[in-house]
Length: 103
Image: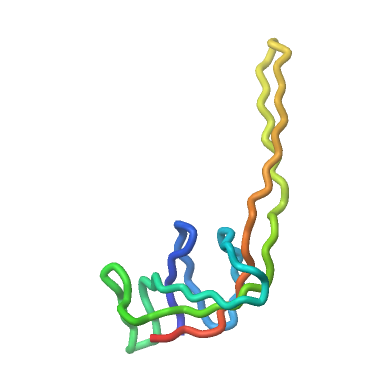
């Protein structure tokens, strides 16, 4: 069984046992998270597509850890002006493991 969920402004196709890196949630590690915005539940002939969401469907997950991704180097340079700027950015994320898809 698969489901399409929305979190952090993005859509993810998930199945039980999947591990995802999603936008940071304000939840501690080893806590349970419930996603209520389920756009579709795909299960062969028993598939349900929401308009916009499926009523009563939810996806439960366990937070594995919170962290930061690899560093992005942003370099701005203007030729012949002796103007350089170096900026770094690390996007925070939450690693979750999908435990249950309820219909």
